[in-house]
Amino acid sequence: MSATKSLSGYAPVFHPTGRCHAPAGSQSRRTEREMKHRIYSISFASIYPHYVAKAEKKGRTQAEVDEIISWLTGYTRQGLDAEFEKKTSFEDFFGHAPQLNPSRKLIRGTVCGVRVEDIEDPLMREIRYLDKMIDELAKGKAMEKIFRR
Figure 1 (spheres, one colour):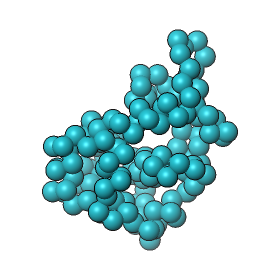
Figure 2 (cartoon, helix red, strand yellow):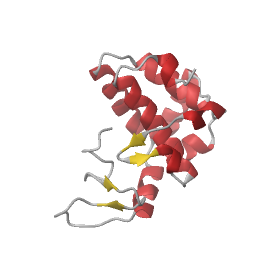
Figure 3 (cartoon, rainbow, N blue to C red):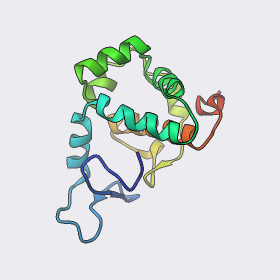
Figure 4 (cartoon, rainbow, N blue to C red):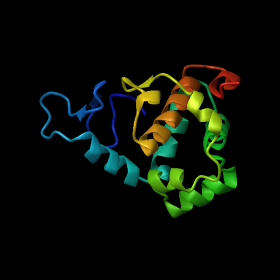
């Protein structure tokens, strides 16, 4: 997902202070907390095609996206399909992940201008780890480097 498109229909601007604001001229201003709750309740299945499209647009594959998700969360392809069928929210997707990879904490860098290692909310940090890994895939990084090996 790009920084210019958001799940709520406007492009949020993330500030180093951790606050999220609607761009100038928008009708409403939402706090970071309101944005998080919206993101948490969205089904993972509805966002997954965007991850795949982003990767494929840059010549990468759905299998590589699945490998990243599996590395990060421990889900198998069958496990992912079951979660898609249940329309599992992001909150439950990460909350019930078979085995979060301990090496995920080595992921560093920024997503939407926010350093992932500085995100205090544990669930938001997990979501941003995935976003960061998909960004790296789309930028052509080797899988070994994405997995911090």
